[in-house]
Image (cartoon, rainbow, N blue to C red):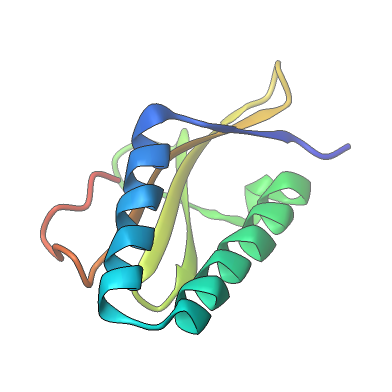
Length: 100
């Protein structure tokens, strides 16, 4: 059974920020490619959430790489069969501010 993806407000904000950054710095084609990469990765997380690595801070948070410069942080809510997206971090914007 696939898990349901739930976006936290921070995940929505960070995703929107990345899209805005990509639209500013790159072409629409490259932005669309990034959105496609995110969608594919979310489909994998829905089906196989435990394949993602745990973060060093806590075993409840996990991370998965979307692109060599972009990481999704999430938490698995087993009882509700949900994946809570915590944030999406892109090193091109501010490499020292990862909150994972």
